[in-house]
Image (cartoon, rainbow, N blue to C red; front, side, top):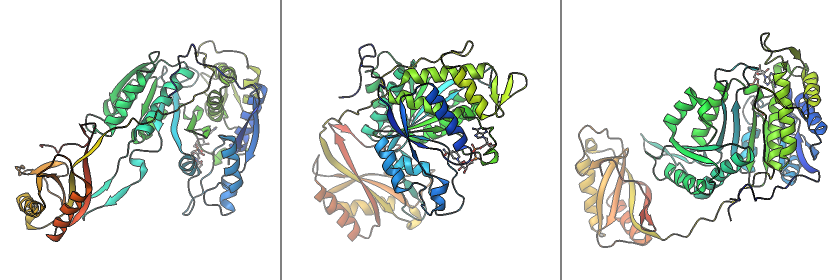
Length: 496
Ligand code: NAD
């Protein structure tokens, strides 16, 4: 069953026994900031044990193109949680991005990025902004299924799945509960993409109904992104598809003015990875001036994930108090708002000295124990019926006159009892009765329905394809037309 417990009755486990986690110190400033973060975790009595893995630059230099040696994979898999310092990606061909490899191999389906302003202590154009973008990380156009089909046309498949959508949306609501947030906003473009983005929106409405304690709403992504850019303080948690989330999380990071203080989480069903948003900053490595805040914020996300919300809260509030007291590393130091410029070590000491304290001006954080657990519900059974087929044809003859291809296809299809319903070019109906203004490429989507039946089997499609092929038509792709539980599961052509 899905996780939909009432927060007042849900069990609230805490981490009583030390939990082993994998730790990668990373490259560049990685070792300095990781050392600092572990020191703060220890001082706060975080119930953790560290299993160090050596990934990144050293592994790349040993010829491991993924940057992750076999023993590190085993440790990460066994521990299920990785706290990762930034990694230097080597220049030049042959090397794979370690983050992309981890994300894909470990099925890290959710990317969570908070963009928050810490004004007036750190400058921001949007002083009240505090947005979390929860981005689906595996599906959508990033499945990478692309083909060139004709001389003029290439396509990509946008894959949206019910379990994938449910998992990320449920994660967003569970996240909102764990972090005491009030609203989850879904952003899609389902006014245009009714079956893919529409599925995401539909699942959002279903899951939202299970979380009556959290407000929910939906915005079309274009106006949503514009509003995020103009009035980010109106948003709380945003959940969205992969591509939109990629763009949106960069917009929010940019306008918050605090990228250097941001943590990032990549969450999977089994394994989760926590890190800073920034990179390995080779320009300041080894100088003892790096700001450990981004990784520290990532570590507090990790503690909430593991069910140690109390420790996360103590650390985060001590860190907020340190910022508020004007104890700042060079990257955020400003003569008007800062009191003391410090290096990594002194900043770390200042946070440790404030463990147990809360900020006065900035809002203290309140986290709920219990961790975040997501179990997607099984997809319900549905009756699937095959009704027809869209056949895509590469055709570039006779001035691309739609009547020529239309009549030709009708003639071939009639020999096996199929009828041609319509032809579209780039989604616009061109036959029968198209408009002369429509631009025609060499890529024709031809919708066929059986002349003698409501439902058919696959053999009838093979008959049709055989007839088209024998008549000389260049078939490049087919898409079946189904209904699921009687509901049409394909889009109509524009003008159909
Ligand atoms: P970067 O984030 O490392 O540095 C950008 C600028 O911000 C630099 O001037 C740097 O000194 C400063 N900076 C970054 N973090 C800081 C900190 N904690 N304290 C003070 N100043 C800080 O970005 P980049 O220079 O584009 O990338 C450097 C390397 O990091 C590259 O190899 C890149 O591939 C890698 N990288 C890794 C990750 C990751 O592991 N998740 C993310 C981004 C970049």
